[in-house]
Length: 154
Image 1 (cartoon, rainbow, N blue to C red):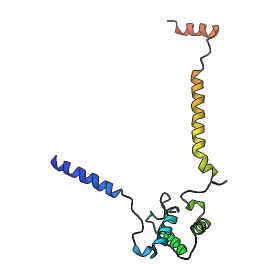
Image 2 (image 1 turned 135 degrees about the vertical axis):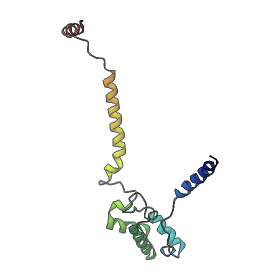
Image 3 (image 1 turned 180 degrees about the horizontal axis):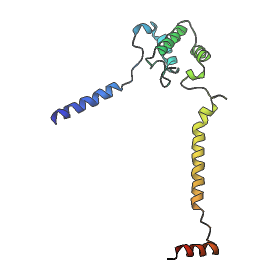
Image 4 (image 1 turned 180 degrees about the vertical axis):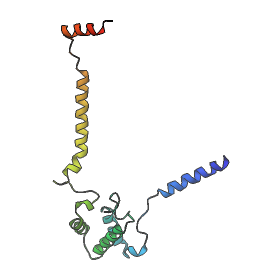
């Protein structure tokens, strides 16, 4: 029992440390020698989606493709491309999907508006359901009353 009391806090601490955000750049050779360029490359990489993981930026992903894309971003930054040019190059090659935040345009309008559409449909159904419950039932006709009396007779 006393041992369990000692292990529990250690286990909680280990879980919290394991969940700590890690940066995918674990090879110092990947980093640029110029700190300003490295900072720019990291900012650009945080806006680009890992095409393997799909829910992580290329800066946070450990996938081989993400490492390759980080290398391309750094090459283009060193070559003197602006942030917009690097992003445009990636979008030209991989499409808007490579952006973690796709732009609002005709193609992505449904993606951006779908939460509002879902809320609107939900509210509409709730209002219709409430109206249906609030409407009183129609009174029984004489024929229905007679049939009811006939069915409920012992």
